[in-house]
Length: 77
Ligand code: SF4
Ligand code: SF4
Image (cartoon, rainbow, N blue to C red; front, side, top):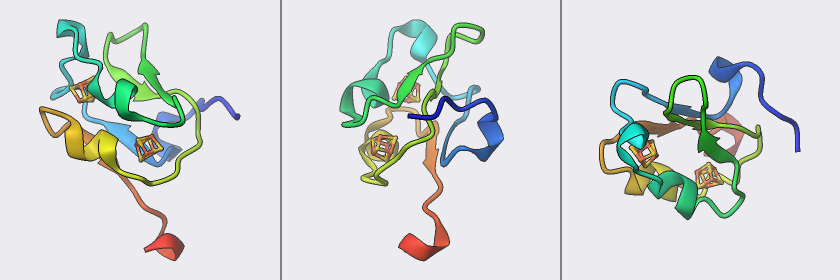
């Protein structure tokens, strides 16, 4: 899987202001079937570590603070 170097270009964006991973939340990481979300060691917040996604949406739906935004490609809508 390709490692994502450019955060703004990946399909799943985490709002670091809202993310409470620094308080122990791991919901999005736990629900993702592809294990592509992880904690950014620099910020302590969740982010998309691998640029791979099924657009299955539980990460966005289950995040307790609405911090996750999945940008579904136009062709898949
Ligand atoms: S579920 Fe939301 S608050 Fe929890 S780690 Fe993921 S992005 Fe952060
Ligand atoms: S949409 Fe599905 S595959 Fe993509 S990051 Fe969220 S849980 Fe993982």
